[in-house]
Image (cartoon, rainbow, N blue to C red; front, side, top):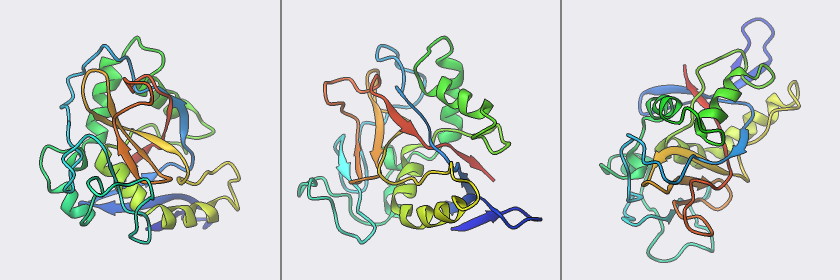
Length: 220
């Protein structure tokens, strides 16, 4: 995890992370809170109906930075092992690494919706105050967002340095984020970077209409 420094002025401009052989940049700010999309539309994305990492349910808790778990975690929904273990469990949410492709699919299939991932990402890409001069940001998949959760302390430390020159930069911790990973027609996966909860169920049923944040990333 390293600062991405401006070559000439040595001012921190972003956070880089490398996993699964690919380097990514994490946006300095979150996108606005919006819904995932319409609950009556099952996109062409693959549906992932299990968490993974030993928890074959639709909800689980990722470990916190010190390896412990939130007090809200039960005995049967603690996700154990390493991120590598999780991502190797095929056809589970935590194996889904195609956030970029999924976002582009949603950009097409959510055309016409006004409160969804597609419009949120498009707005972010066009916002010169937040897009850092790049137009290829996308919504992370469940596996990509889980990796950010695991390393959020290191990421926030770098963001803290960036805030010295860019006060508008915001840390990743303390928010609930959408992923681009779908569960079914009415639900999609989200992750809390407060307690590590990865879930698909809203407080009142169908969750695609619930407003959560998105933390855009891009490939380097």
